[in-house]
Length: 595
Ligand SMILES: Cc1cc2nc3c(=O)[nH]c(=O)nc-3n(C[C@H](O)[C@H](O)[C@H](O)COP(=O)(O)OP(=O)(O)OC[C@H]3O[C@@H](n4cnc5c(N)ncnc54)[C@H](O)[C@@H]3O)c2cc1C
Ligand SMILES: Cc1cc2nc3c(=O)[nH]c(=O)nc-3n(C[C@H](O)[C@H](O)[C@H](O)COP(=O)(O)O)c2cc1C
Image (cartoon, rainbow, N blue to C red; front, side, top):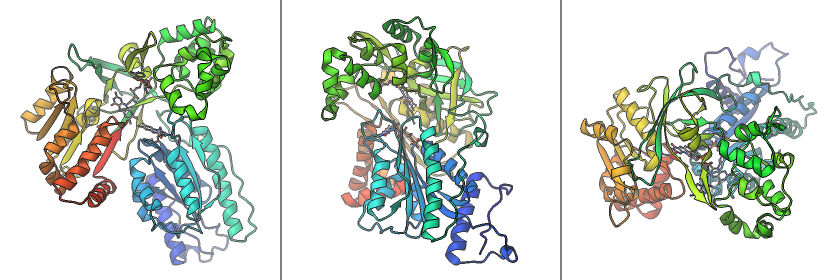
């Protein structure tokens, strides 16, 4: 039996490089039937590693991180994993691979993350090949707060099956707390792939013993989502002028002593604490003083007050809470009717502006704390696009955050994390943070390449970082920024810094769109269209195009404007414009950081 040379862990490669090389060697040796010279005379050679492709679709890095972890784990179980970004799906011939795992998130209305769009187009196309020899399984990442929960993972799973591939292990749909279900899936998948391979080989090899212990010590060490760094807040500055309808704040956070590093384009995860006044109101509603002993979601014992303040999401009602409240006559019986799946849209409307406190208030049979706690979810961190370059601000990270505040049903409401930063952090209250690497949002490696950045509102954040970085590295490529907001007089975020960069030529073009400064609303996409000819010539000269900010409308409008530019100034047909933009995406020249 040929032994495939394996790159040892001691070799001078990063774990990711090793995975790639092992996957490559496994493919090369199995395709070419090349005998490994070192195997000569080695009768006791162990079984060759089984080829396994781990494909990931990821926008903000979660699926990517999980895919890397799965690949590392696979390597230990005797597989030769090859980790593949779905943007590079063409490097994998699915008709020849025996085993594929797909780990992907969902965005928008059940859409793929950006890096998976081209793969999805290919999979749906008429030219998609039959895959009768492929064993596969899908792990879908999502968030139950979205109605199209894990929809893209579901779509991939169905489509692969339709193409004839064999689902060796059921898909798993993971909510924001994905670690435990993901671990269960991984164990199941490795066992299933091992037995599927034995079965198809007709061999009687015993299913390998699968260890369930993925020891914490095997995980990358350091500060992480699970173990955030208690950082010091250095500055909290309001960026809007008096009379603005917005409250956007600039934060400076010290990373000194953490060993944490980041690149421009990354996001910072912040794990907030809930508002103490809201926690007190919930305790009053429950008839508790807060000293009652309860458990955190991780099983540690604590007081009810601390659990509500630090560990549980006490604002967004879960489906389980809604059900329990409906059975106790919530909203005068109205809620029970709204839970009918046919009335999904009515329920969404009813929930708009309502929080846990509204759902548990005034129940005919009040919920006890012990009944409420299992109906709440774990408090989740929020992500923020980093707005600084580490080269300009060593050991610091800056954020640009809009505080969420609104009044509904007679109560003042506060977004958990944005007001934690605005109101509840001081220079002595730590901000628990971790760095969320975002490989899909990066400056071109070559500083001579021009960049076009479209970032209205808080979307400016990563572009302030990009501009600081390009200044620090002396990058010579052109910089063009589209920024917009409501009013120039109050909402021109980072005006001084941007105007200074314009004055000294670092920011070659700054196009502004203040929607409320004139009768007709003007947005960044209008400015793009006004400058279509020049925008097209920048794209044709190799510029990278970036967009950051609101996903629900702005990013869609900017995308439509980009297509229009390709048609009007590029002279392309509708179809050719779609192809052109798709190519920009697959070449990583059109990148989005939208939320
Ligand atoms: C990759 C990424 C990068 C991001 N970067 C940034 C950034 O740079 N800057 C930034 O400010 N944000 C950014 N965000 C958004 C950020 O993560 C949070 O979602 C945001 O700060 C709100 O969180 P919160 O905890 O304050 O509000 P939450 O407690 O999560 O409350 C928000 C919810 O309140 C409800 N709500 C809001 N307004 C109203 C209203 N008027 N009426 C009724 N209900 C309402 C909605 O249900 C909304 O979903 C980013 C998100 C992602 C995923
Ligand atoms: C703007 C935005 C839209 C999202 N849309 C959906 C959705 O439609 N369905 C879903 O299940 N999850 C949705 N999610 C949640 C993500 O899929 C989830 O957070 C996932 O873990 C992210 O993985 P990634 O970092 O690999 O992209 C959305 C998240 C964001 C920020």
